[in-house]
Length: 64
Image (cartoon, rainbow, N blue to C red):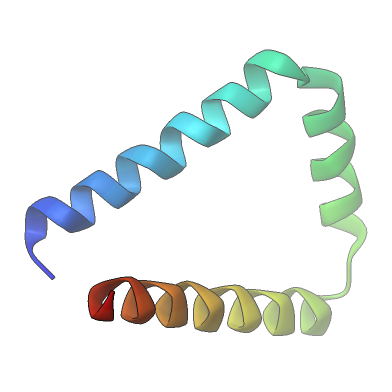
């Protein structure tokens, strides 16, 4: 993976997140309020699952 590819991936994430705030700001506010109340262990597990899924997807896309 090149540095340019990494930056493109970050750009896509930022664009999607920006669209979420532009389309549904009240939903995003409620989501973050809910996130603040979530236990740390559950957030950690969710983060590990998301990271593993992202790495797996990136690996599959490189093979394709």
